[in-house]
Image (cartoon, rainbow, N blue to C red; front, top):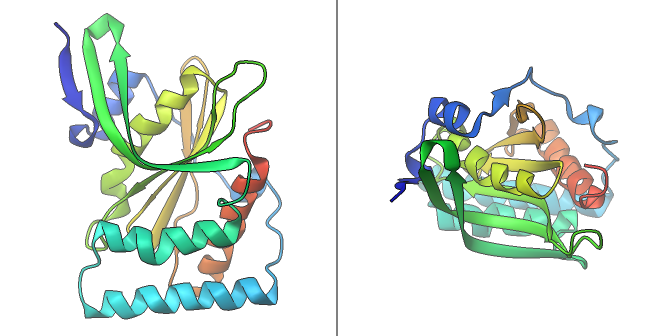
Amino acid sequence: MPLILEASSLSLNDVHRLLKLQKQPNGLFRDFFTLEPLTEFEQQDLARIAKDFERYLYAGKVSEGLVKFLTLAPLMRLAGFYDVPIRLTVEDSLAITIVDEDIRITGRMDILAVNGVQAETMLPFWVLVIETKNSAIDVGEGLAQLLTYAFKSLEQQGAVWGLVTNGQRYQFVYLRQGTPPTYQLMPLLNLNEYQDAVELLQVLKGICQCRGVGV
């Protein structure tokens, strides 16, 4: 009978040891795609999203549910994640079996964006895995959980993007298949800092437009 662990209970040390994940030097977004200028409409919509979230943040702690509703839903719509062939799922369960340690890791992803089905494998391609926290929690506390969920995709594809956010701060992570598998942290972005907010939307658009091809 395997030992069952919850992904939410794992530390970064656990993730490194159990999944054999190795941290690489921090990366830069421009190494992966071109950050295209935003249109005037996109800038206006982005400013509204940031202003709405800031209003709730000033009133007190913003729950995980409101973080999704106030920031992720409109940001992902604006970035193109609602368009075909991208498909979003929420609260998806998963399990990872560590055979040599007789351990089974279980969890439930907050948001997963997939790109239809790959013709070669007939498997869905994971474009972006998202873990949300309430606004009072530092994004670093959700990193181990995010890495665990995103790691699952490396069973069927070469790389994947992950994102952990508390609504205000956004930490992107890039995971790549290999021996050992690796991950890179990207620059931390703040929705309530204008230039960061612009880059945040540019990055989301870049990930969406890649749609798993050559990731």
